Length: 231
Image 1 (cartoon, rainbow, N blue to C red):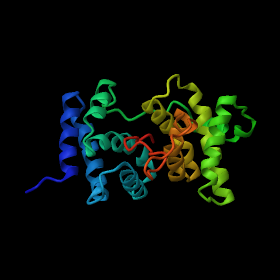
Image 2: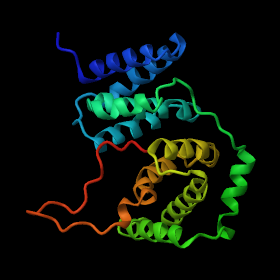
Image 3: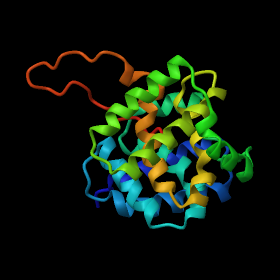
Image 4: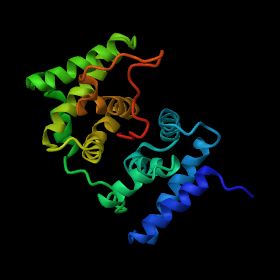
């Protein structure tokens, strides 16, 4: 019987985590997460956008209290699912696969204060450039006024929080997203926040601030990196 992509990826994922000393209890928890996710991955194209859409459907099907625990798992599993050996090796070297659930170091009261103080928070010229680029991209998507305002506020919240991150690395960005997630869980907008966070990663990193090359032979100007499960 032919093994499915999801089953093959799960075997490789479990093998690597076992080799790195992840506890049996944590392995069972992560296997259970991936088995549930796999129901949403079945028969979809092997690509980043399709994976993110499947993750969105999966997250919408679970209790919000589970989200902080499943996010690291679905992010890690992506590279196994698309069989990206280089990405797996890089994450392994960076000790990403430690089996630990991220701890929230900011209280919910502190997160709410930061959220409501955003209008009084000044930004640097570089931060303004990031926000202007994100604003332009958001305007082109036809959001209604309330959704547009919410998106921009979420992006600014992330950008201010990311001041604490010294290097623009994906795992640092993910940690900051997870750190702020309890605020949006409380507000009931966690799915919108995760969607914004995925898009905003490329603006924060600077990809969307660089002039894009002219399209060749009718190809689109910019391809979002398929391997980025930033949030």
